[in-house]
Every structure is written in structure tokens, then in C-alpha cells.
Length: 393
Image (cartoon, rainbow, N blue to C red; front, side, top):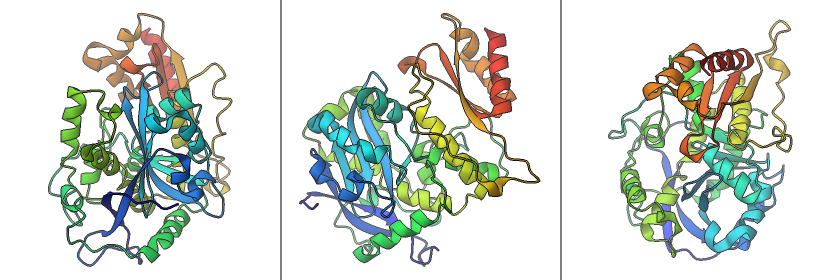
């Protein structure tokens, strides 16, 4: 597959040695951005997943009120050698269905920042069960966007194809894919960067408060992963508030193309950096939690029976015949009119519950699902949260 593209951007790639570049900056590769309206414009290795050609890609979706009832407009895919903007409006259901095998495949790792609404939209609008993701949007530390720090560079400074930044030699692209894929140490990792960040924080002994949250902008600013300042994200957020139908307009404007590409082009690099830090136990938890997050808001009548099974626990995690506690997703139905008791004044009630339990507690909010609370975590902590919530209602 090859066709001309008027759009280009830079993506960061790790050095051959796995270490930092001498000038403390990530190596950058100039790649094309393709707007896809037909499946033939996508790489064959993506459309036909294979165990011998496993991929790691950056992944995101844009739309209007993105959820089961909203409208998915664009799906972004970041490869080491190109970025593809899959136009769900122009290509329609036929194009999205062609992507279904890849999005459900365990041979393609999808690196994403918060998969819940994307997964919900894909499931209810196109019947796609998103699988094998890494989510970057954890409950972690609040970070302030700054000048970038060590190894940092400004996002705005690398968009212009004319700027003098050394490009990564094209021959290293497949080496990068092998590098990244081999890091996962045999796990089928549902790489949700949100979860990965949280697990790394836990490994390093950092305490989290229940309302801690790391935004995508904050994650990019963290010098451990990218150390860049995402200056244009604010501009797009303002436009989305002014016009919620921003992503529906065609043809895609230069700003739309740039914003869509920027949301995914750093994700594979962040994945590579995070995988270097995760230990065996965290990798298993990452795989399980990624799968649970994908199905979280996709609640149906069959209790997720049609979804892929959760990852098995590796034998090497057994210590003295004891295994780490299983992690589960629990969906608690709240009687109509009682959600206010769960949330409390200015969120005080739900915050106090989170402080008592080492579990993720999620509410559908205005987008839904309505009258439901979703709890993800170790079995004992989930049961504890359930008991407290039932006591409140």
C-alpha cells in the first residue's frame, strides 16, 4: 500500500541501544499522515493480523459525544513509519468492519490514553470488541506542563516538515517493531497507558490520592516518557467547546489532521519507555486491567460472555504456592434516584469510598450507562467497595 500524502509529522523512536540519544532527545522520524477512506489504503499487516508479524501501534478515536450513543468520526493509528487517520464518516461501516480483525486481535497491541469511551463506541456502533490495549490515563500524579525537561522538545516545534531535525533512517523501522514487541516478555499485554503509568507509580512506592488524575498533556510533559509541551491541545479543546461537531466536517482541515495525529504519534514511544520499567507482576496486572477497562462501559445482558477471556496468571508469579489476588470488574446497579447518595455533595461520598478501597470506581455520568457503578480491582477490594456502596443506597 502506497499513495501520496500532503501531510507529514515527526514521531519519536528509541535509539538502537535502548538508551538515550547523546543530546538527551528522542530520535525523530519524518512520516506521512494518510487520510483513509477505503480499507485498501491500510497496511496489509494491520488488516490481516499474524503471529509472525506482530505490531504495536498508537490508537485513538475522535467523535461527537463519543460513547454508545455518540458518533465516532475518526480513528487514528500510529505506526513507526506512518500515521493513518481512518475516516469513519467517509468510509462508513464497511471501512470500520474491515478494521475489526485488527482491533480484536491479540497480535496487534493498541496503545491508547483512556480506552473506555473508545471501546464503548466501537462496540455499540460497529460491534467491535476492542482487545489487547495499553491505556495511558491512570489515576496517578498531577503534572504541570512545562518546558519539557531533560530529553524534552516542544510539540509545536516538530510539526513543520521543514524544520531541521534529523530523521530516523527508514531501515530501522522493523527493528523498532521487533524491539517493542519483544519487550513484553511473553505476555499478551492489553496496553492501556493509563494503567501502565499507575502501575509504575505503585512499583516505585508513590502514594496516590483517590482523585489523582494524569491527563494526556501531563503524561507527555513527564520527562521520564516524553518531556514535551503539548501547546496546541488547548486550542483544539476551545474549538470543541465552541463547536462540538468539530470532527464531523469534511474535508479535514490542516488543524484537524494535525490534532488527530498529535494524539497518537507519541504513544508507541511512551509504550516502549514504560515497558522498560514494568516488572513481571505489573505486566500481568496491566494485561488484566486493560481487558477489564475495554469492556467496562460495554455492559450488556450476557455479562461479557462474548468478549475474549481474561489473561491467565503466569506460573512464575506463584510464591510459596500462593498467587496474587485475582482482579475483576463488578457492575453495581443503583436504584433510580439514588445515584446522588453514591456521589454525595460535590463528590464527597464517592471520594470517601475511594479512600477506603484500593479499587477503581467509575460512573457513566451524563454519557451513561445510567444508574450503574463500575468497580475494577482485586477481589477483596471490589467486594469491600460494593458493601460500602450498598450501605449508602
